[in-house]
Structures are given as structure tokens and as C-alpha cells.
Image (cartoon, rainbow, N blue to C red):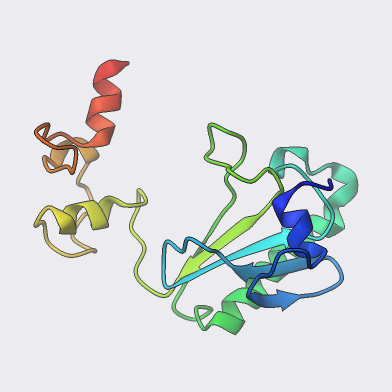
Length: 158
């Protein structure tokens, strides 16, 4: 696809800080990192999303996973651990419609994503103390006068 951002990066039309490359995949640093290590692993051919990866592309799927492993090794997060994310479709949070896997690491990552950071910003104990807490139990937010979390606000509107 000629106007796809990631296709243009593969063709060298747009610069990227490359971490790893082989005949099938390209990995580069995310321009809006969400962790100390935040790398994208993409196929060199255009595939819109994980949902569009066909059975005939099994080798490409394997190359993507092997690319993630190489990125983890090269960025130093292989032994400490990392998260691999594939946002798929608009509701899944995909913003560039070219299949890409996020590799995040370099710090403890909470689940659900952002919970520890929200808690720490609101004065709760550091990451690791949130097992068993639910979003609804946090009463702090950066939403101005309304002190509920975004999750609570969305849930209430449903």
C-alpha cells in the first residue's frame, strides 16, 4: 500500500531507528514510547491487521514472533520480561493499519495496563501492590473535579 506509514518506513522513505531487520520483518523504536523499551515489529509486506493475516501466511506469523524474540534480546529485556501487544482494529486501539506487534519492557508492567501508573499518580503504593484491586476501588483521576476513574465514567454511561 503506497500511502501506508509503515510501508513507507519499510521502503526507506521515512526514517526510523531500526532495532532489527531480516528478509521478512522490520523492528524499530516507537516514536511515542510507553515504556523504556517500546519497539514495533512489522511485516515488510502490507498486512492490515492480525485479523487479516491468512492461513497461507503462517511463515510470516512465525517470523513476526521470532522478530519479537530478537528485539527482546537486542534491547536487553529478554531475561527481565516484556509485553507483546497486537492492537487489532479501531476498537482494539489500532492506529496504523499495518500489522505491528509492540514490544514493551524495561520496567515492571501492570495489568490492566496503566493501573499502577494511575495509582502512583494518585498516591497509592508503588506497582506490585495492586493485585486484587479493581479499577472501581481507585478514586483518583486527572479528570478535573470528577474524582472517578475513566473506567467508572465509561461504565456508568453504559
